[in-house]
Length: 42
Image 1 (cartoon, rainbow, N blue to C red):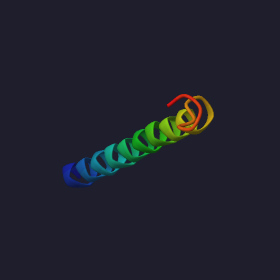
Image 2 (image 1 turned 180 degrees about the vertical axis):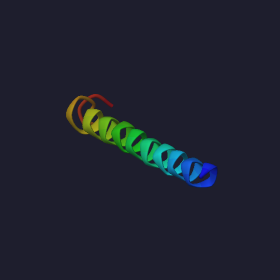
Image 3 (image 1 turned 120 degrees about the vertical axis):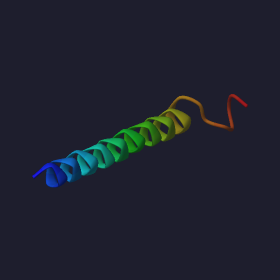
């Protein structure tokens, strides 16, 4: 029993980390393309 519970927590943490990383990447891409275009500002 404890092993499967630990497995579920581990998988949940991996999925959560993946979602957080995806959101961070999406946000930086969104801001880079829309608000900070490399051609005009820099």
